[in-house]
Length: 256
Image: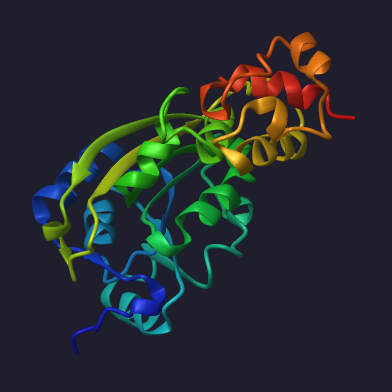
């Protein structure tokens, strides 16, 4: 029986075999990798990964798809976790001794940002991540200071990861086709992120970008004085979207 994509789960299944092969080439799986796929859907990419991997773990929310996957694949090779990726403990997954976890997936676009932040909690245990996301989200993730795409998501993820937009995927590659273009992003956790407390950086960045049209001095009023911004090497008259990561980190270090 054909699975009908469910809007409430943001299901758009990748069906273009050429695109799938390009993604597999970008991931470059090896037999003994410890890999988990988020949102495997009907198993199109799952099958291609299992052509190389000794085993693969997947996290799937849709119980109908969980049943389909368990029926379709050898349980010795595919370990299916039925649950919500937003609540899932990726740090608890078993890995090959001496190896870190590799994470892949066509992420549901309606939960992509909170899911990226959830996964960041496990960055120390992750080797790399390859995701399909809405193109506009990936552009925000990799944006440099100075443009409209640069914001909270850019700063927080660039503090923790080296990220690259690999290629664009058209709507026609999916069933049903989404209304937007997609993109493949590679995320590699940085071995040594700039030293600051994540919660304090999050606080500074959230406040700074809460009023993008205002200058930084006004955005962070009540948190820093103009003199304190100068002391941190930050121009109080700068717009938040022009402030580089390093300066946000310096401000986070000064939060009491």
